[in-house]
Length: 241
Ligand SMILES: C[S@@+](CC[C@H](N)C(=O)[O-])C[C@H]1O[C@@H](n2cnc3c(N)ncnc32)[C@H](O)[C@@H]1O
Image 1: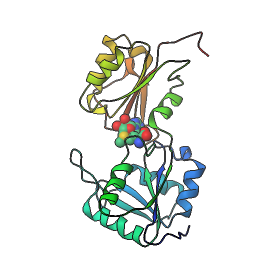
Image 2: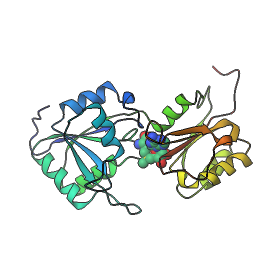
Image 3: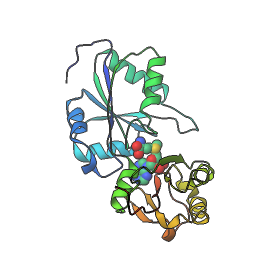
């Protein structure tokens, strides 16, 4: 893919799904094949991130550059990563920046873009959506997430079950918990107290090596890794269409 905007470049946030390479969309593949450069987030220059490994399995031999991120609370891309990306964009490159799941939901794509802009880059931007972890988990568990007019809440469990408890107060709501793996025992307790553990399924490393998927009531804990998701389906509604 060649650009006609030398000095600006183009960055495409490409969602590659939660793990199973066959969930990468045709559009994502087209963009990856046509890009001047593929860049993947990583925790360090020598570390192959999850998104990178999904792309590598689909496009063997493809060159993938790493954008290291600082692994501190609120840490973003390193100065070196931003400098490298800014340089490639200034040469007018089209960069496909891959993220796990979807680039618009809790991904590194937007923090990277904010940093690039703050540093003076002004790339054209495009986003290719990806299948999210909770969608794949619900599909694998053969469970509906919401039906009819039921609401869906997405909460974060990084600090424990507090936000989940608040969401469960609405018994009509389905709830998805992201980033709660380290507090899974507490999360499952909260589900049990609210009488919702039978509606819930837990998935750790869905589509990746080490995958575990089980109903919350049968989860053989204790906690899980960061890459764990809980889908608390809304209570069954026979009449909804
Ligand atoms: C940084 S967010 C990335 C979310 C991703 N952008 C998405 O759209 O699904 C990380 C959280 O997503 C969820 N997640 C992403 N991939 C997952 C997977 N393969 N298995 C289980 N949970 C996953 C977990 O809750 C994890 O803590």
